[in-house]
Image 1 (tube, rainbow, N blue to C red):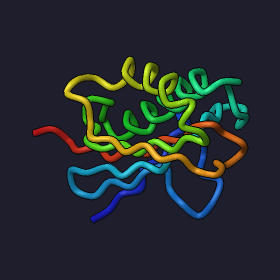
Image 2: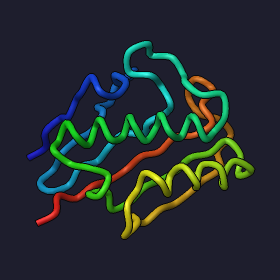
Image 3: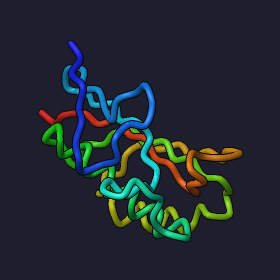
Length: 127
């Protein structure tokens, strides 16, 4: 049985999707871009600052299901240019604890609202 997860600690869904869906011990989180949950505006001029906001948004969604970044087993990172990889990676490494989740990083032509980075995660409740 699936449960919809929603929280004010992350930006509200702006389309026909949920912030996250829990199914058993798994949590599937929608991609987060660097939107401030209060203002709804993009924060951060560079990819490092935007990645900080994205990680905070992810943390908020996970917390709404009593989970943390330590529960994340897989991430997918979308960047508008691979030239931003090192800066994103430095911030990412500060937020996600070891053992690090599996990860894919993909360069895309564009992201919503002109964001430079979007990250989606899948988490698994630890036994």
